[in-house]
Image 1 (cartoon, rainbow, N blue to C red):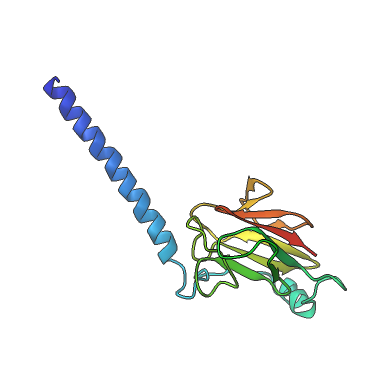
Image 2 (cartoon, rainbow, N blue to C red):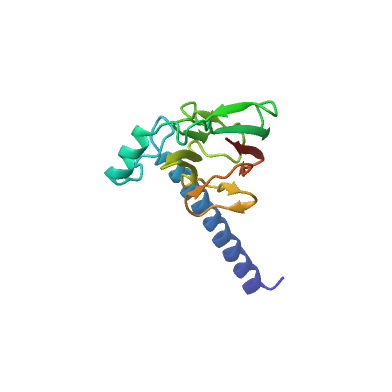
Length: 160
């Protein structure tokens, strides 16, 4: 092999290796920037008026009991139900209300929370993203009956 070509290939390989290491360090820092209990270090601030509505209305609409049902998730039997009355965090950490034993889940991966009369799901800056009905989420989205939340290979169905 020509010497200049060999040198160019070596430098190309080193550049790719360097970019890969930067990507790994960025992912690790994203997980480390979270609080020790698995929750995000800085929660988004909601206007005081919406906070009052939430505390005054923990059960949402009368007779509605929001819950997540496991479709397929490691560590949980299909059909296992999680009550979401006041919301829940989902992730690998021990502090998560819904523990997601999936190698593609972050320690604090997503959260489900009430806003007004409805429940919403939001990705918490996870590395691999949260999917709602097969589409990757970019912002908090309102949950509707039979919506499917996917984190890695784990799937959960929203029910009321």
